[in-house]
Length: 403
Ligand SMILES: C[S@@+](CC[C@H](N)C(=O)[O-])C[C@H]1O[C@@H](n2cnc3c(N)ncnc32)[C@H](O)[C@@H]1O
Image (cartoon, rainbow, N blue to C red):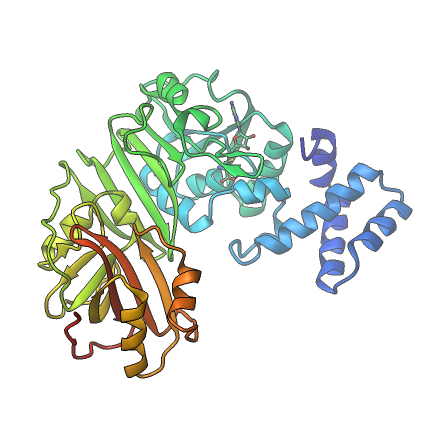
């Protein structure tokens, strides 16, 4: 355990908070962590308290870019790493407004605070009492009322008069888990225990397999924060959005798309004027075909989510357009010859289902300057074989025909 409960209780006391504030300022002035520890020890703190003070100071500094009031809050390093991003917590909490909710696996309260701020009456449950002590402090700082309860998420009772939000641990040491049976507690057990709640939302690994046997039959939402796919959530009962089967969300913008029936795959066809890369959240929710159908796109290959379209299409947060310059069979010699005739731009090699070594390809291309802002050599496994599609990030250019 990172932090024991008596040290946590001391940390939230006046002297504990003063020590964390002083250590944070000292670290802000680049003071050596070992020196800070020694000074705290010289002030009479036990080794445990001194270490907890330094860890809380470091965590606070790391939290600042996501938590505007981080300097008043308390975290442990690990609990901060596990805490939901506040933007994502706020988005999820909207489904729980004005409910009586159990926040299971509450940690230091990333989600519990957002749920309470959204108007829910929250009981935060965790096995780790020390984390709940920090959570209670964090709630008080925000002026929010959150009850805490040290308990196993699988032992507490819910039932049809309560809503349940659960954020099980998704790490084994440094490794992130994907299978729902490896979440802690396991997702199947959470559903078995709390499936009769008025509404249930369980946070899952963003890499969850839609065929995972423990994924319940409800809505699964994929959430992307900026360019990163950060999580999936399974929604059941009143927390499900009508009869949604899957949905995708882009944050911080709050764009949201819903699929109610099974996906209808677009037909594949030849590469057109643009490659269209759909946002990962929409691809994971199998909404790329739906988005593609809206703009008259086709798939570049039957099994690929990458789309292509003739002519231009309107901009959208749901996809990125890349004008196609030329299409070749995936042979470095041919591409190298073409590159010699083109204006010099940094090159990036991007693989779409083709098992090659990009470093080897780059060497075979004559080691052109590398970088993400110029030209891409997209190596795509199409139904006709491996293809090299050269695209640009800039405004459409006239397309040459490749041989
Ligand atoms: C991903 S973290 C929660 C983060 C939290 N939602 C936040 O945003 O700050 C998972 C938490 O689950 C707790 N946990 C693991 N197994 C549990 C169980 N069986 N019952 C209750 N809590 C559990 C861990 O102590 C940890 O705090």
